[in-house]
Structures are given as C-alpha cells and as structure tokens.
Image (tube, rainbow, N blue to C red; front, side, top):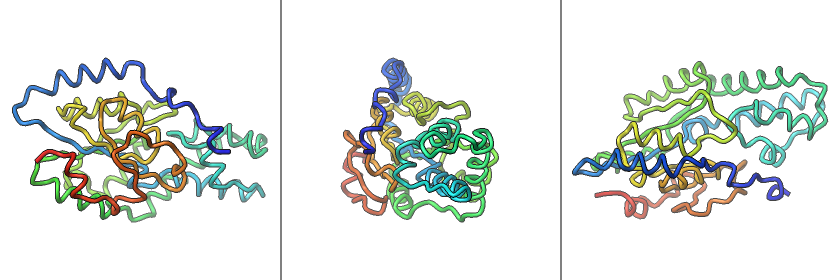
Length: 254
C-alpha cells in the first residue's frame, strides 16, 4: 500500500529550522506595519511539473513494454528531481538494463518540452486571491528548483514580474524541496515574519516544511499527492477555486 511506503515526515524537517525561524523572526519585526506574504510552489502549482514527469517516464517505459502507473509514481517518485527516484523505479519495474543517466536526462528533457509546449497561466483561484490581496499590500512569491533554462521559458510565458510575483530559485536541493530553510530564506529576503506567511503547497513535504518554518499552509494536492497527510493545514482543497475567499482572508491582515 502507498501508506506503507511513505517516508517518515521527520525526514523533511530541517533540524536547524527552529533556530533559523527565530532569527528570521527577529530580523523582520522592526516595521510598524506588519508585512504579510503568500508563497507558493511554481513548479507544481503552476507548471504541473510533477504530472509532466509521470507522463514522460510512463511514456518512456511504455516504449520498452513496461507498464508504469500513477500509484507507482506516487510510491517512488514524489521527490524534487528525477535523479532522486529513477534508480528506485528501475528496481521496481525491472528496468535495470536501461541507462540510469539516460533516463534521468530523458525525464528532465521531457519536463522541459512539456512546459515549453504548454500555455501556462495562473490558476483562476490564485488570480482572485491576488486581486483581493492587492489593496492590503500583501506580497506574493514563488519558489522553484527547475533547471534554469526550463525556468526561464516558463517565467517568460507567465510574466511573473509584471504580475508582482517575486521568484526565488534554488539550484542545489535534496530529495525534499522546498524544505523549511527555503521558505525561511524567502521570508527573510522579503522582510516578512515567517508567522505572517501563508504557503500554498501541493504536497505533504511542502506543507509540513512550511509548518516547521512557522508558517500557515493551504494544501492543494494533485492526483499524485492526494493520499498524503496534510495535518496542520488551514484547509485542504482540490483546486484554488474551491477556497472561500472570505474564510481565507479571516487569516490575513486587514
């Protein structure tokens, strides 16, 4: 069962996060008017990179007469980059003879092709949140660990800068991204108390790490992460359109 293979949530908690959170808190509380920020994952909330990886990998394996399903992807592949899960997939489906390096490259290239050929747009629900947040001076930021070339193409299509969304990129990441220290870096650079940040997360790892950083979360799992534990989130929704804006803004400053 999927639950039996899920990694311990403790694996995603950065032991230095509590100290870092305290430091960020002390450095961002000097303003008379408390700032607030809404943070989200660009790769999966907007780019659907996780599903693109599944489509590419299952297609590659199908060409080798190997069936690879969504539940299998959810079991082995919910990590930041293909390099962290390809070997486990090869072991599970009996594809050891395939080149691991080639598979990683093919999946990464496939994700890039998917994002370059698609017409990404901000979800309607996120646009509504931004419209209601604008008069309150709430800041928005996105985090990403996509390769720079892919990221450049995606952000140019989205025109994030003109939308008022700050982008924070992370090149050297481990299996679980974003970790608490990533969220804390964003809060620090935006000069916002971590306790005044709301994170829109698409996976257990993103939400739990935000909670570890002292932030509040809303979970928007996709079909590949819907089975995960989202305890501690303010709400769990299938998509951002389901969010009751009046309820959401009860948690946000006037």
